[in-house]
Image (cartoon, rainbow, N blue to C red; front, side):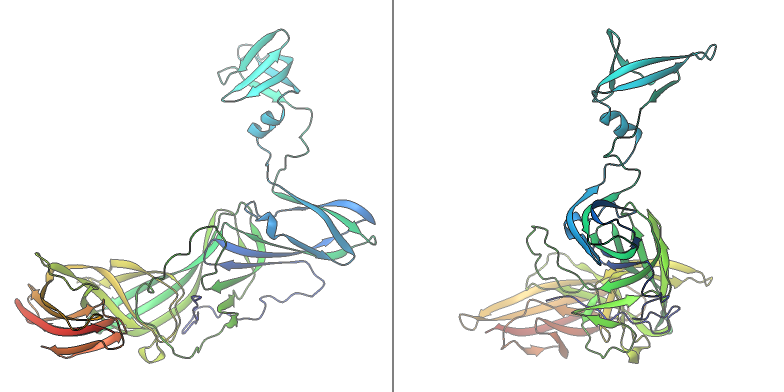
Length: 465
């Protein structure tokens, strides 16, 4: 199953659209970059070329240094590809010296006392943990000392490039200018969402800002590129075993609310275009605002979750969770792409203070989210397995009790969630408090606990087929 999301904007600072940003004429060169979440991008580079007739080599500079050469595609009218090579051996002083092994270079030394220069011809014998030279009848090591020394090379080797270069041997039917489209996949480009939430506990509201964070570590800048973002987890052939299914992080209940924002489907994914062409520099992190919502209904809860029916000798702290929905009725009305939510709360002076962060996965619109921000040391839960009864070969009854203590000066409600249930005939046979089913595998109880007091929750549950 593919994970997908509906990336909607709500009260967005920037409006995303599916139409091509900054439309250009069809006969103009252009650069398009489609960035996925998992360190992957599709580059589509339309360039003007002017080949002669017949077989020749075309060089394409400024391609990504992290290109996947096996994914390269070049199309142009009247062009047949014979061979392609990706030259990523970049020109550096070390590479120059390595390529000079077995060849002659000139060594220029300057006397620091009188400034006089001497030049000698040397053969480079080795460049392993240092440079070994043969000068006349003697062998020397090129030292990095106080004597100024320069090495002069006759030329730059043909297979060293100042920048990553894709060279393609083509056979052209005719001579003359035309447009060529170079497409390839590359690693080193990725995007994610980052969220800043200001939580107002007395009002049970939060303000949520969302930022798209682009990162470029591909070794190449992408200048004035039409940039699109794909939300969803694309499967790559990595030779690794497929990871087991994990529930969505931060999501209590997945939503099924109809998509109300911009963006259109791309297969089982969603794709969105930045409204303007943008330059993504090498080793740059760029942020673009995409979400700004105020007054989203939210509240703090204390939560305890277990997927086992066991006893514990010692109590455990309940988790502190900020619970909210991204449904339209909750004031947000936006699918949330995967990223990190960072929460802040104002102190007594009215200044925002960081209270915690957590990650979420791609979350469709209409979902309920629970963002854990820490543990409450003064609200604890201690489980006890009272009895286990075999009803049949495949069904078991568990009798559980949970002692919930509250050392705070005010009453609290603890959301206790019992996982580990399964089977078509799962049934809560009796309980000291009313509960509800979260999904096919989880039952939940909202347990009120008085200030400086405790509450005992008990229930019998039969699970299995």
